[in-house]
Image (cartoon, rainbow, N blue to C red; front, side, top):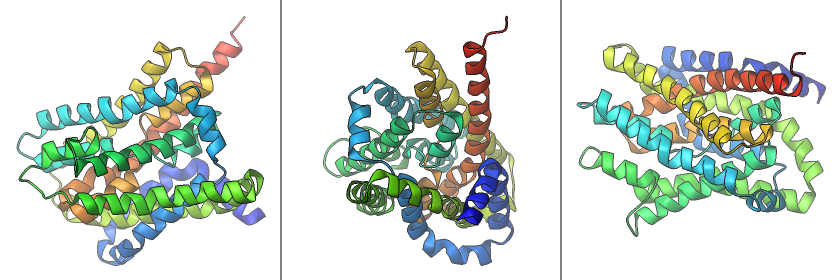
Length: 331
């Protein structure tokens, strides 16, 4: 247990560098690392389960009794950011619709389970973060399901608008994979929390934390292998796409902070809304992209985790310092 805790303590602040290493391995050894691709869905299930342990239906109910932060985060996640991605992508890549689709898929994906790590480090609201992740996943799944029945609203709508005759969208396949990778393990974790108690599940989550981080690294490493052929022929469009991917993470953080300031949320809620407005479940987006879209679409979701971890770590430190100045103003 001590060794696992030491490993987790060592990995937590080094996640941006470890993600960079995982990206490099996947790009340098795509044939060898690509053998891990069939295991990505199972690893996604494990990561979602491990990070969801300790949350309960009661936590969800407490957060929903004050729904404003959740609604504000949903507004940022699934309306403002996808529209920004659509506008920026269409303007920068008028002849490369798949690059625009890559950006929109990235911005339309659910909130990142890994954001919980930064919420804990920064002293944010864990209950709010868990509720956003779970509810956001259900919203994404529901809107994909509605896509096969009525005019869609969030992720399916933007994908349909961009896909058209470019690619065929396997709606039922996306429903199945989102359900299996995210909803089922998250629900299972909440059921276990109900049956075994929160304290037992919290201890189990602590023990599984290093394995969850390792699973994330393997997922990133495997998903990025499909991008290797493009980097051998790095061109202006790909460099621009990299820069825009970074810019979208910064825009998300700025938007979340602006909305939190506008509504005068307390610090724990402010931190949670800010981080969750930027961090996405890029592993799920890249996995879906690898399974259902051309390889060009995989690019942004695959490299985005590096930018997410870097920008979120900087944002958490900046918000912590800002709050310290508020709590302890210089005399």
